[in-house]
Length: 255
Image (cartoon, rainbow, N blue to C red; front, side, top):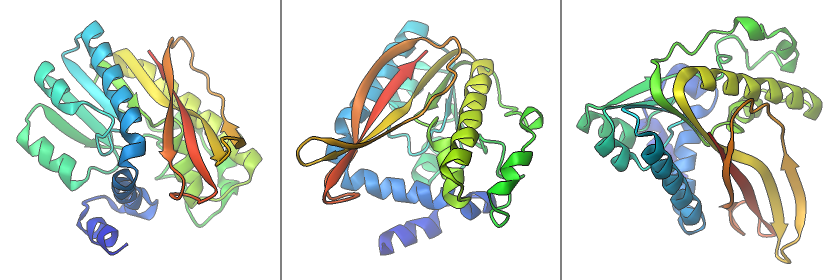
């Protein structure tokens, strides 16, 4: 916890990112990835392979990664070698990512609230304000157009991060999350000539007898995106979240 606090204090981020917990989440994910490195190895390898294969098919000159985060799931060195311009889009870019961008002029960092909601929602007002969200008038992304845009394991996290700071009932969250995820797909399809989306679509809680004790999933309008592949990500091995169960996610990729 002390090391996480030090890292948090050293992480450059906006007031908005700190108020809504995104700066802390970025630091927390970094330390969790170290604790769970063995369990995450297969997932990260599959992400890298997916992106390499799709790059080979498309061979884009300009790439945008939305939800770039810690770049764990991105074979960034391969992309730097093969592409002319890479935009990394997230609300927080940690010290390692900023250092990488300084070394490579191809990289441009963009701090962006992908939900377009954080400046119009108030953490102290409760979920009642969600009824008045002007979905059709939300600020557009206003990001550079690119040959290829990647939504990197972000889809489920956009509403989840907001709900962590703005508690709401299950029914309210279901409707809110659906609209936010659908909006993400709509904007994604307008952002680049080609699209790659990979995200967790199902969460399973598995006990020591390998029995699924809880299974959560969600729906989203994927429009014309085509299914590529899926795999299981052991995101939380036994002992990380609970000694009684592990957490697995079903990750799916679309283009």
